[in-house]
Image 1 (cartoon, rainbow, N blue to C red):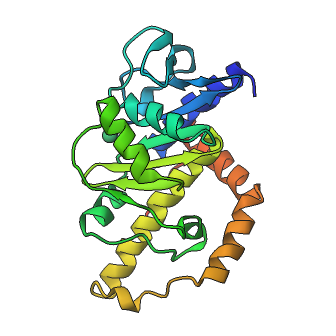
Image 2: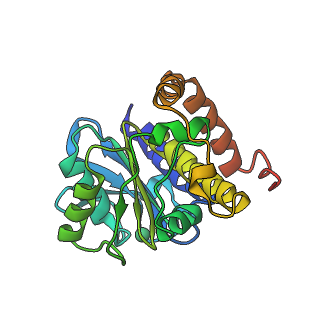
Amino acid sequence: MHLKELRRDVALANRIAHAAGLVTAFGHISARIPGAPETFLFPTRASPALADKSRLLILDLDGNRHAGDGEPNTEFWIHARIYAARPDVQAVVHVHSPACVALGQIGQALLPLHNHGALFAAGVPLYEPIGLIRTRELGDQVAARLGPRRAMFLRGHGANVAEVDVRRATMVACFLEEAAALQLRALAATGGRMDALRVFAPDENARLQEQLDAGGPMNRAWEYYAALADGRVAPPRQS
Ligand SMILES: [Zn+2]
């Protein structure tokens, strides 16, 4: 993908995070630059709803700014240090998604309860220390807690997703919030009884992951959320 298209996708991904209810004023999505893997595209200090493809910054893994005008969002260390720890990761999402915060704060592991939840069958670790990730050291701690997985919670704060491209990372962040919200809803219906939840079995998770990894559902989800962010479809009625 050319840099021009990547800029468009990164800006759109940030606006999608807002349209999907993962963020309000705070949060950010980045993408590693192909051909320059020590650098990544990152939005300036503003709500992701306001991300503009012509105003994205180029930062490196040590937090230096290489191009663009304006200050970066202050938690850029989350992105820089996950890219440093994970050469396989091409995009990072950081969101303050409410169901992820609630689930983390009741101390429950995310369970695979619906189709897209199967993506998280390997587990979603919780980073315990509270507060913003504004130093290299904290960024390294977050990356270490994430380990080889695709998603993590930050207690009382939000969630991070690390994936192979920016579209997929953004959709996985939407699915993570969807999974957390469904689990909270199921727990409310069972009076908080974890043992009443019918969690997918390992072979069921494997089958569902295979379907999702085939690409079709991710592309369709991106198409939908892009239309939502651009105002071409109305938000769904809340059930
Ligand atoms: Zn944050």
